[in-house]
Image 1 (cartoon, rainbow, N blue to C red):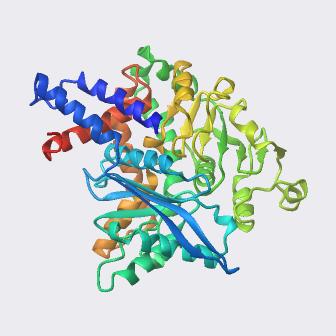
Image 2: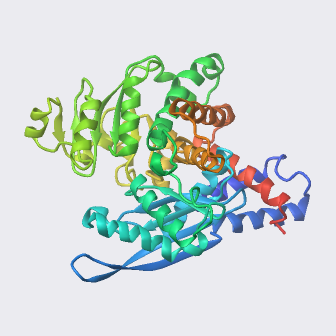
Image 3: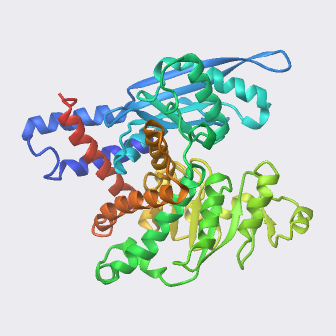
Length: 458
């Protein structure tokens, strides 16, 4: 919570110095508008919390903490995932809701920011119990959800199955009313969009590829003439073989790793991957397709025993999962959870390029330290928006009852992310702010102008 707050305040200060910020206002009126913005962006509109009453299959009744936090609806209905994880708590969900507001504004999506969570480890519950938890979540938050109110989506610990269940319960509670757009990230047969499952991972890799190939090659002369420290980092890694490590091998990390293997633009190879149990390493590059096939057959887990590697003809060393972050690699993809790089390990990070697939994987202290060292960080707000972008396409397709094929979805996804990067990257490489700061400044500027025109600042 504190991390997002400090970045927002720094961004607002930078915006205040920009002549394009609310040019109609002068002196005291401008200062008052600034203070209003700080208040509005720092706090959520609504905090909804409940304890789901769930009867278990063994006959006991449990009470499970559940949240839905709605940060801002300035641009449109609230939008954000529902997370099932034992670490879920109110501050975390509020922080993620705030990030969604800024992310949707950055990518010019007609949504506000929201987030939900249930404090459980899904692996501790049966399918029947998980189904009931999903239904209870919709029942308890029924009044605030809806296609034009608040549209949840999958997050850590949830997927299309859970969204199907939730949409089905919403439909049952609202007979005769529109329901198909009440949730996104659904299965195809329930109105989901082709490509939604792969969208976040593909988008994460695309941002990296676009910066390091397309943008760099199209602007090489300009970049070589600047003294921007991050431009130097990018140029130092141009046209070389890039060793990559991926922390987190779930839906996001595995898809990003697969994309690297298919890429014809960059010479890169994934030498290490990890999950909650283990790290696998091969200096010559891992067989990502074989690892994906293994995880699909083993509840999402990577092989953790030599016998498993041999049976599936996977060549890799088994190492401790925590070693991955400090390995001697060029690029680090963070696709696990929050606060993975922190004050305790930030000085041991060797990668000079970091791509944030997860939300908030670097703490504030570590973020500043790495930026001071010239480490090029492609932040979550920019890199992992593929999911919400394709969720928007799913929302639109459901309204129109006209669905795109997978190629069309990915083409539109990449064009959307390309547009955002073409807007942000020239400014980033032209000033001293890290990329995260540039993204926040752009989002805050957009939200400021919309709020002012809606009369929300006075």
